[in-house]
Length: 249
Length: 249
DNA sequence: GTATTTATTGCAATATTTTGCAAGTTTTTA
DNA sequence: TAAAAACTTGCAAAATATTGCAATAAATAC
Image 1 (tube, each protein chain N blue to C red):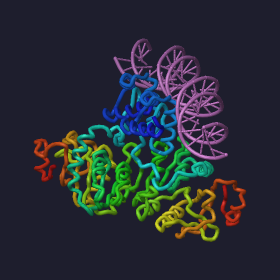
Image 2 (image 1 turned 90 degrees about the horizontal axis):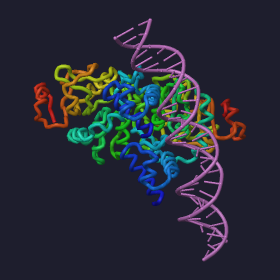
Image 3 (image 1 turned 135 degrees about the vertical axis):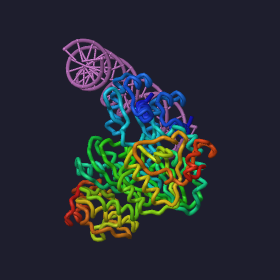
Image 4 (image 1 turned 30 degrees about the vertical axis):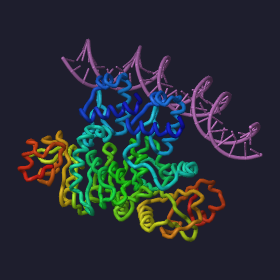
């Protein structure tokens, strides 16, 4: 049997029974448990099921995937996320933006950390759904079917009801003189509100977003307090931001 | 049996019987009491049930776990859903409540039907995510980790911003004199608001919910305009509702 | 065509997690 | 207060994961 076919079979069994064991799959598909384990790992990385000890289970009904966006560069994003994690302290109220870097960050939050998380991202909710001590508040609004977030008036109003210690924002484009920009007017408004309502803003950005600009203005670079990237803070491309008074990690 | 599956079985039994003993669980799941004790500890740390001496009880103010209800009586729920579908007309603004009946209904909405849907249920969003012409507005709020809905002040405020043609509500309990009731104060408030803001309310109920009552009052039975059940409208158990002026389907 | 690379699979050695048991402690019950 | 039931802790056995490696098959280059 060809590998793809086997993956299909696994998915089918999971969707039928909601959970399957390695032993059963290994027997019914005539391959070793090791192979099944690897298959499940592949499928779980694609977000098509959830790997658990001894087998796999179907995902929760909370939407968890970004459809339009490819999950490329995940390694870099995890680096950024793990650097940003240090700024989150027990007991804080934090805003989590959309975007895969932020999703990676949510995955890293320790299970015993008490937090209040306000977010407008379905994938983030999906990650925190299993978190025992995080109080999660979802900012509703019009569903953005491409980014898997909510957006618009309602979303902004919700964020206005909170005063966060920290806003963890994913960056679309950042430029020393053009400031923070994004591809969409409503998103710009929303990000502006999130920053206003938070004591401190941390921008998560991979190096390819630095020194670029899009059409819709969010605010000057000095609106962010800290920039976290996937390179060394000593990288000379970052000097211009340091001179503007922004802390780099 | 894999561990995850066992945890769900425990949740299911707890939500069905409201309380379970270590001894019973140990016998029915074929593991030692120690293991069950550890399982219950895990679940209680996630806030999905309450550990008590000798077993576990359901968390009183929280609706039963979504997954536990998911498989239960799906056939009946689909009957109810398909009957309710006829009331949804092109171009309307509709409220969709949580619950598996409503999820089944969302699945039946034709792909070419133009609608504005306001909901607080993640599973419903998940279904409508693929719908090409439905504008989906998600009512944010505090995440209810068992029912996969949002709840609380924020959620209620969001619904107050809309005037819907139709509110499709899942019923917890309905009784001719006790009225509409549910297991949780916040949920009761929310349902009340949804009905207030909608021109017409349709209650989806399987027969086992009829003539039962829970602790938290939503409103009199006359708050709903139509009741859709899984039996014939001529069923004599429904007469008392007809006499109250409610249309039965 | 053959050689080289690449991907896949199973196996073995080594961690890690889960589970059941036993001994001792606490809580409940009568 | 004594007996029974339930809980806690530590530990060893079993189950499951991880890693590296070799054998095989498939793809690609030469």
